[in-house]
Image (tube, rainbow, N blue to C red; front, side):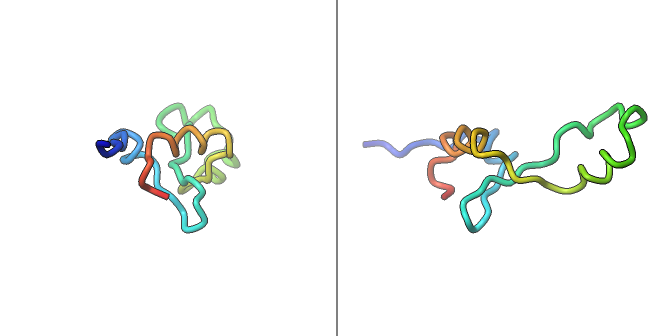
Length: 66
């Protein structure tokens, strides 16, 4: 049986925490910051943990990163 392949796009965008949750960059901060509130910009710093539904999809793309 051949090895399963990791999606290279997912490998670059997501990482796993020690407890198995999926960590991703915060969405919605590329452009158009003038129309965003200051609170949104503050809260969207750094990375975020994906929801269970989204992390289930990402884990299929990264079979060995568990």
